[in-house]
Structures are given as C-alpha cells and as structure tokens.
Length: 140
Image (cartoon, rainbow, N blue to C red; front, side):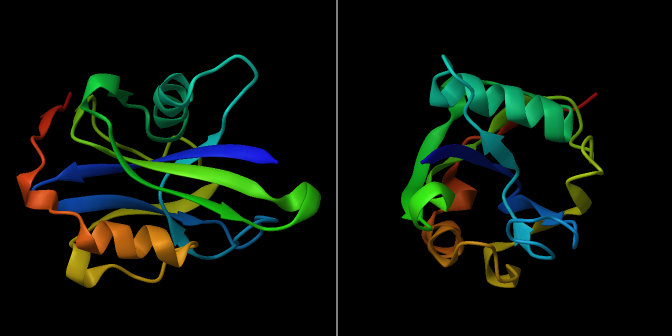
C-alpha cells in the first residue's frame, strides 16, 4: 500500500489546487491537492512539509496543519492510504515548482471547486469552514 499526504493550502477562504498533467499514470488531467508519497522513515507532517516545498516552493508551518480527511483507494499493489491536511501558515509564494507533475495551479473558493481526483476530498473541502482557518502566509 502506498502512503500519500496532500495539503489544502488555504488563503482568504480559497484553497490551492494543482492540475495533474494529462500524461500522468495515476489520475491524469484532473484537479487535485498537491502532495505525494511518504518516504521511508518520514512522518506524515515531515512528508507534507517536504512535498509542499518540492511542488509549490513553500515552507509550511507543520503546527498549522489540521487533518482534513483520510481515505483508502485502489486495490492490491495500486492501493493507497491518503491523508489530506488543511494548512494555513507557510512562507513563500506558491508556484508550480513541479511542472512535470502539474500543468497549472489555481486558487478556488469551495463553491467553485472543480471535480477533484478523490470525491471525498472535494466534499471535505466544501464542508470545511475555510474562512475560520487562521491563515498567516508570509509571501516573499
């Protein structure tokens, strides 16, 4: 089973999504939260911080991460355990630092959310009170 972490960076009641390249093997050509595999020896939050730096060029404050949802998907060797987190604090300006993985990043209000790779994550984002999340982004 693959273990995956993803983050919903939240700013002004909007969430940042990445659009997965059409040539990706898993979940091509869909919007999703940025994230990736937990490497051996990493905790979820350490992996989350590493992935946000690799994919968006930001340094998240792991203490600001709030669990959003968890899900299991797929079967056999293709199965994944995914944990999604709301993140309200980071340093830097989010940018597409992984153009081989995503062809676009964009901020969305929950009511404007496009279909995402995992429906449960989309539902959890819509149900979360993003405006109540304390956000302290230090953009550079």
